[in-house]
Length: 222
Image 1 (tube, rainbow, N blue to C red):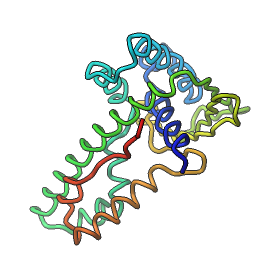
Image 2: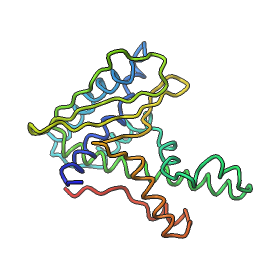
Image 3: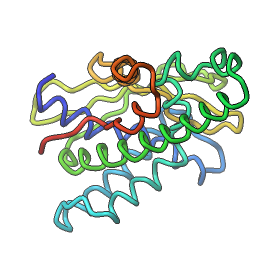
Image 4: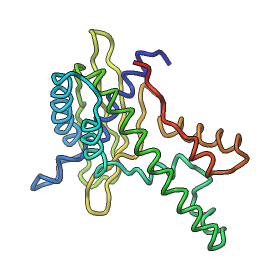
């Protein structure tokens, strides 16, 4: 993948991750597409403020991004999916008590590692591509009872063909929408991370603690 595509991929990905924040303040919860559109506008305003202040990715800026992400991203579910066969319910049930405690601890640690990496990576990317025009395509006949929705977003940059990003959103029992996965220009982020985790697990002979200790998010060379 070209460097520009990598930059753009990580720069706009956060827009989906914060998509459902607005619904906590609404009397009637909007659908997933409305939430993406409303929150995109709010997030880009915050990014514009940071760019006007010098465009530096300060600790305060990352903290702001983290506060936006925490309520709306299923970090634990995402981490479990990335761990794949190493964190399935079947494997958990096959372990003894000590093994179950160890796996739960490993999932907790990996969730935190992914959370930290995603906040840093996407926050930095947002500053690099804060000037893009972003459009959320609206469904012709949305299902108000749907539990899972794919939101399509088009990112227009420098007059080129727009980048297509698909946000796979899921609705919790309380009705709130949370990000489950992203597909950017036909690149499935969850699958990429899962492949990376399994490859690392093979390298460390199945030692998940070593995999987690040496895990790092994709770096962006700006």
